Length: 103
Image (cartoon, rainbow, N blue to C red; front, side, top):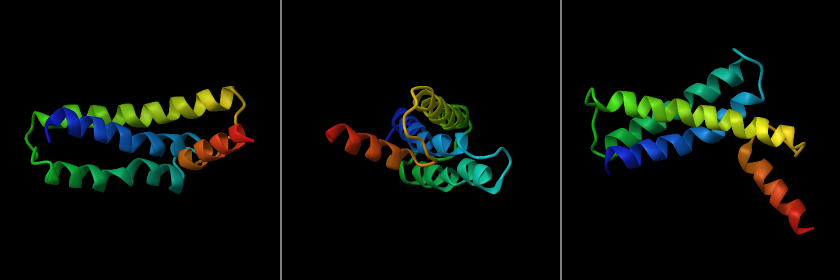
């Protein structure tokens, strides 16, 4: 895998965690967990993708990490403004929305 693929996967991993973070109190345990749980996944991704830990890769992967968190927060706020069902779990909200559309 190259750096671009790792950055895209990092971005996608962080969207649900940013969504979760948007619905909890700032600096609570859940807020801290929403920020830090994806870190081991990103580290493992870096290891198994063979991009390593070269200095030039850090700004790109860190930017993808924070943009993923930001996109999750924005998606939560978008759904909230449309008055859709929102909880702290992006996957369940999408599932419930899809289930209600079929009925």
